[in-house]
Length: 522
Image (cartoon, rainbow, N blue to C red; front, top):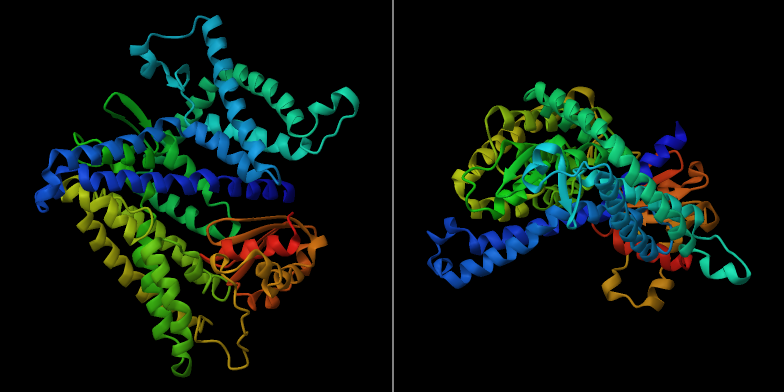
């Protein structure tokens, strides 16, 4: 069980490379809509100029094309996340393996005379991927190949041969193994994917049969798994596969909630966003719910400690509201009052259920900045964003009332309510990488302090990071000194088997650079 959990943790981490890239694509689509969408032109006259309109449509049309090639993005991105070294070679092998995989599948379908005419592909579960006709697997094909290449790379990239065989050592040997493996997977996919597809369809029907309650379950699971790092495995299928919906937009069939609303944003002929957008309405709790929780924790702080509580809660709440980065505020109460985190997960799901019940279809995946960029250019008809804000204000009040009641009733030790014997920890300032030379970074005490707190360099097997957390694989996680980590700015430590996550917030990249520098590479 421990090995399974470790594997899921590592796989969840590997999804960060492609997942964090896609919102950037979404921003370009939104930016194009600002100039190419006719709704804003009614209020800003210069946007009516044909040149401005064409520029906007050019930007959004170019960016939205990535939605038809997401499988390739995952096939390349996952090996980058999984590989412990030589990540570039792992990505290249993922690219080659994916191309071979789809062509192997195509050859099987062709030899079996199972290829259908172009006009019948949609009803037959086939599609064009990189101009190759294959079974429609969506991002699952990219995830499958990416995971395969990542596993082979880590296991065999250090393989050495002697003599004339030396040229086939290392990453070349990985390619030798990955290419025939991709061919075999292509054959297997051609034969067995239709059965998997039937299972996925049944699962989607089952979830949708729950109606709006399905959103509550989904939202609860997505939040409650945050401490384990496995929440990506909950929302990724809904955002990028048919679990999150299927829509025909123009001539294309689009799968997944996020893919659908990105495509609908760029299509001026779509009058109203699909209801599938609510599978990505996780921003409701990020923008409004956690703000209410932060206010509740502040007003319940002891009089002499309100300034300290404000210093902790205000920047964390603002980060969650504007950017949708929730770890700083969630970790302010996750460990000291876990009951509040369970309540938070329930309320997050409740908010998503309310959006569904009220027929709200605004885009609200992350923070308020994204919310404005995505929704305002679409207008209130296509995206009824005012209703999203009204539901958000209701959730703000609900969070505040429930959190305040529980904190006082159970005497929870949220920020500003700690016992007087609790000692404040003096933090070592983390140096900013953009103001620090390589020589200065190498001599920085922060990286070495973190390494010492983690049990020394000999205890560290792998170092990586996501958006807000330093993610490590340690030989012995029991010897981690959490108090010493707090001195470096850590907001919390999560242990799961040999996987250890240290939460730093948005400056985690700077922290990791200093750890890498002190380790001399790992």
